[in-house]
Image 1 (tube, rainbow, N blue to C red):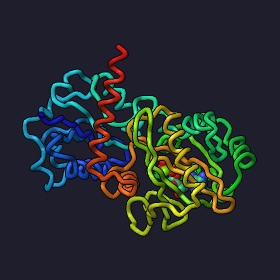
Image 2: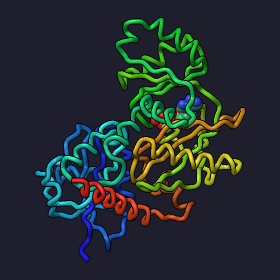
Image 3: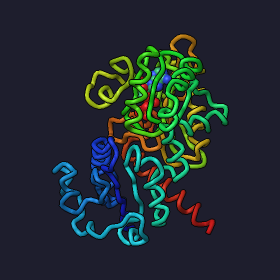
Image 4: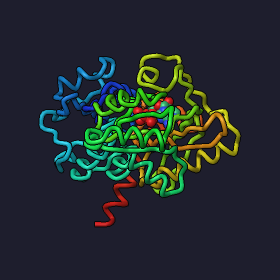
Length: 352
Ligand SMILES: Nc1ncnc2c1ncn2[C@@H]1O[C@H](COP(=O)(O)OP(=O)(O)O)[C@@H](O)[C@H]1O
Ligand SMILES: [Mg+2]
């Protein structure tokens, strides 16, 4: 049987450009080379597709020998039918805005090509923290109290917004750009006097803000895999080495700990797995997602924090590590995701 050609889209315009490169390299090294021919397709920070030379420069030299040298980097257009002449499946290992938010997925729908992960709706509703939480609530999934508003309203009546947050949410609260990731633009606000500063920081990254009640919590993550009948991994716990899991504790320092499986009573563990699957299905996700929870340290109540439809995917990232602990190794996980992409595509084309 001839090899299936997998185009790995990586890099991208978002703040998570570098993380994406690491995930792509990990996949590149681990993928079953008998079954798959991998073509890395880099996206530069300015959003353009990298040419052959730039593509090599984005990747470390040890993987250069694996890059096919006859790929037409200069003429590739990811939302064109022509893409199908060169690759069979796309793995968009892109995080954050423009990668994980339905935009690239829309291009791939137009190109009529199978791709790994959620489609347009799952990706876009999973990206916007306000919309995501409203859908979760409509499926009786527990979320912390939140208040959301747009920039224009802040400019019009900031006093009213501060009043509403103080009354409805209280302190400490977390102020977040509605569409971001990697904790970029997020702050923990302990006093009303610091709210303005937190909101102005978040407004640098998005025109919509979400403010949530802050709790002292265990941070639990679950990996979900599948299409119509998704499965949940064993839950794991993140123990940040500081006040909260901010950008530096995610990427710069290594003192944050991952504990797999999470140390929780069996009832909470099974509830979290059930919620993770329900959350995945409620947004119509496909392929993979990591669902993140808070378990209140005071009363052990469980809340869903968020879903990540294209979680970090290096060999040592939480998503693959949770599957490893649940019996699916990294190479098999990649093959399964490609199978799921093909299955979803086949089911869709039957409709036309
Ligand atoms: N409501 C909250 N209560 C307690 N901690 C929070 C809350 N919201 C966020 N955090 C902390 O901030 C981190 C980043 O927030 P999150 O909503 O997951 O944003 P991102 O999408 O950038 O990962 C969380 O991992 C957690 O450490
Ligand atoms: Mg998070």
